[in-house]
Structures are given as structure tokens and as C-alpha cells.
Length: 380
Ligand SMILES: C[S@@+](CC[C@H](N)C(=O)[O-])C[C@H]1O[C@@H](n2cnc3c(N)ncnc32)[C@H](O)[C@@H]1O
Image (cartoon, rainbow, N blue to C red; front, side, top):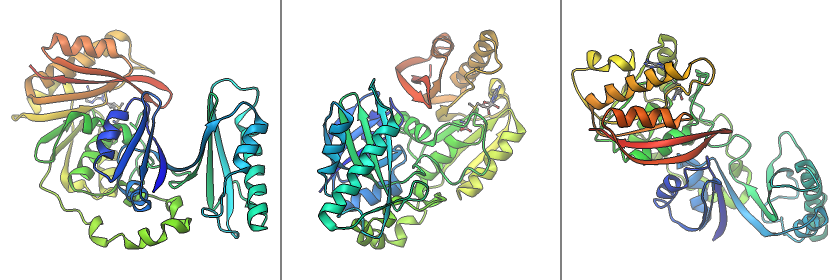
């Protein structure tokens, strides 16, 4: 059994836990709004999570969790860890350090001290001086200091985190983190037998993530870089044991739609969906969200949507008009639930309420560094 920490976009811990419960893991601690979940699981489950998780960004096997007060103490604590199970004597390593809180030293100082400690620990237990390679290390040791807590572990995912989906051949300028898109789909309770529409789909992240889920395709299939665990000997047997069938799309016929007012973004969404192998499962079209009733003579069960936040161009009035157009269209077409994300929570709340929606929940979420809210609402 391993002690593991997963990181994810802060605020979506509940959805990530819902996903985690489908794996063979024992959740021990959830840091709400901090984007960290601690759990216990077998080595094989670490491999499975790296392939299959749609919400998690990074999976780290924990080697040390303790309180520290100074850089000297960081050195001493890390020096006491046995690294030989994780790093072969011929492998290189790098420390990736980060910290939250106020400390009289920087993350680079932490990385330097922890790096020295790893080398000294290995030298004393194996008699070998490990090589450091900051650019292309074989093994990444993550060191986090959160206030006084020190967390040290082996990164099984790598610098190319799980939210970097390789299918993004078209880069929308305001693309949504696919882990947030997937968590919103989980929050909506959409199931593949229901219809789903994203009427402001941009580069198509939400419909693509829904289609991948509906067709049972693992997000890691599109990685452009191998998972870090492919270089960790502990996981080799489980990597090999992964059967080819697990990667075969085996899902129902899907009824997923993506619409955007920009022909350029719709063309980009089609390109992305082709790269993800789900272009046949999604219908994309150009259109204005305010005119959905004119475009469709049918309804939809679910809508998951990431409207513009109006950060660059829109005035509050223009944004109010846009959000009203979205809410009034969806009020006429939607059967079950709308889940949306925005930085402008007051404007979307008002638009939904004035169009007869019942708000089920509003929760704060970090979209990169931007504070946002995910809202779930039932149509009238
Ligand atoms: C935040 S972006 C969506 C990004 C998308 N989730 C992704 O990951 O690529 C919002 C999108 O809404 C679209 N949009 C703006 N006004 C619209 C309207 N009236 N009808 C439909 N789409 C609109 C924009 O063109 C933009 O692509």
C-alpha cells in the first residue's frame, strides 16, 4: 500500500472524490478549496489513476509528511528518507519545490536543500552519488511546504501534468482546464444515455471531455510525453499488465452538441475532437446562444457551459445581455440541469433566477489564478 496525494483545481474536491471512489482507494483527507486529496492505494491503482482520472492533475506517492520550522530542518528530514526504492543508482533526479505561506526563504532555497539531502541520503545508504538533471530528470521529487507542513513525494505523473491533454491541436485563447470541464460534467450528473449541449463551446473542451467519458476513452491516451511512472521500477509490472482492451472505446451512441458564435473556434473544436478520436460522437455548429430556439426544434437534457468572463472586452451591460441570452435560451430548451462556470457570479446568478432557474449550488473554484464559481441550476 502507498500513501498518495493527488492535486486538482481547487474547489472541485467533491467531484474528484466522487471519481476517486470508483477506484480502489481509501480516502484519508480532503483539503477543501486547496486542491489536495490524500489517500491510500495499491501501486496498480496509481497507474490506473494516471491513465483514467479525468479530474486529477498530478499524483504523488508520499514519502514524508511532517512539520518543519527552518531550511536546516528540511535538510534533516529529507536526509532521513530512504530513496533507493524509487531512484535507481544510474538514474538522475530533480527536485520540484513549491511553498504556500510566509517563510524567510524561497522555493529555490527549499529545492537546493532538499536536493542536497537526497544526494547525501543516497550516498550514505548506497554509496552512490546521484546525478541531478533539472531539465529531463528520470525521477522527479516533489517538495511542498504548506505553512509549516512539509510534504515530500515521488511524482508519478511528471512535468506534463494530467490536465495537459494531447488532443488540443487548436488552442482557444480562453480554453477551460479539461479537469475543470470533467468535474463540471460529474457535477451535472450527466450520463451517456442523455443529451448534452455546450452552447458556447470554444475549442470544444466540454463536449470532448463528455465524449471521452461516454466512450470510455482514457485521457492519458493523448499524452505527448510518457508518464513519469514509466521510469519508476515499482510500477513496471502494472504498466505491462495494462490490457489493450481497456483502451478500446466501448460506449453507447452519444447525443453531444457544441455550438459557438465564432466559425474559427468551431473549426478548431472539430480539429480537437478529431485529434481526440471523438469527432463522430459530437455535432459542432456555428450559432448564437441567444437564438438557440431558432436553430433547434428539439430539447436537451443537460447543458455544461463556460461562457466568456468579459475580462478583456465586454462591458458589464454586454455581459448581462449575453448571460441573459444564454439563460433565456436554455430555459426554453433544457430538461434537467445546467452547470456553468464564470468569474462574474452575480451576473449569471441574476440571469438564471430571472429566467426561472432554481439554483442548486454555487461553489468557488480556482480557474488558474482566477477566482471563479461553478453554479448548478434546474430549468423552470
Ligand atoms: C470562455 S470561451 C469557451 C472556451 C471553451 N470552454 C474551451 O475550453 O475552449 C467562451 C466562448 O463563447 C463564445 N461566445 C461568445 N458569445 C457567444 C454567443 N452569443 N453565442 C455563442 N457563443 C458565444 C466565444 O466565441 C467563446 O469561444
